[in-house]
Image (cartoon, rainbow, N blue to C red; front, side, top):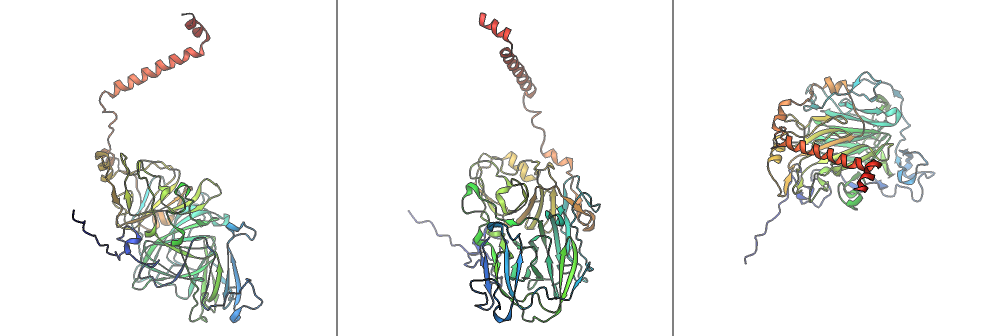
Length: 513
């Protein structure tokens, strides 16, 4: 018997065309065009030095740090928080952050920031039905918009001053942050790149973030966003959480591995600016308002650091998806990349979910999502490819939303095809695309920018005609009225039989018979 021909695997260089990161056949933990080094692992205490031997041995705050550096700490939690939720980082820097020339309050900017996402704020409102945004508008070529000016709040729930809640943003930029850094003192930023590469410099080092990757900047960490080489514009999504932090979800019966694996989260290594003595502005977002610190030295002057308040990034093409291998459609929670806890131990504040290429193998099963009215608010965004939007107008760079308990489900040609065909063969789905979902237990309120200002929003009430493809087949089922009548008679007869057991006289009469 002749041997089967050997199929040679060939690497796929375009990460937007891979089924999984391993299709690239890379031995590196990063994409080929990523210029930086990283440290791997989620939840670790990392350390890094520009000059070896800078970190003090056996202590955090020596009487005199090496090279005349200043020790500076940043805490993310209460001093007495239990060890597993205690977060802090020690930094050894050229000038302390306290050395500055003062604050400027309420600086002018072009962003649309709204952080009081509560009913008492007249500038935010609920949506009566599903909503959808066409791709959010990119900056005009004759206007330079950097990250500070390119942030726009879509909606959310809560208030950063209460240390509880969530906000969704989009960013659209066409310029680097020139001699200014950003510091979010309200909450953590989870940044998802959709268009254009981002070169992000943080106090603790550099991150290169591309479409299909995410990064998290912890509350209080300073950073600057620049466009990657060859890119003149960028767009993406940001999820900000207040009073919580992003964590890996517990895996339960999945075991020790799967979904987003800890080793695939990458943290920066220490980096110091070449020119330390320049004028800088540090733009602080505090309670949704912009203030600025002016100083005559770079904020990126760390020679060494150690701790667990560290930015990180993750490549979504590395997600190890899990799913049903026998029957039924698995709940979307099986696609959770990161989760943020709420004060309710049984209900997260938010989940960040991945929907990318995977095998679909459930047998004797309607494989698409069933119609549902979930308690969660769901915001969907397509990063590239066809996406998983609720209409044909859903394109990369836009978004769609269903508020809590809004009835929704698919009514596409694929849905009708699934109903009419008994498909039991394994198949690859969602190839050459990537969609994310931010799912929150909160009912969102939406800003004026989201409802009218961006110019791309429309209430996406379903055209009743689409349901003609899903007719009422129950009413036309053969002899259905006779079947219903028989079921009614059977229920009545059963009720009469049971009544006998509650009537002592009837039971006595039965006993005499």
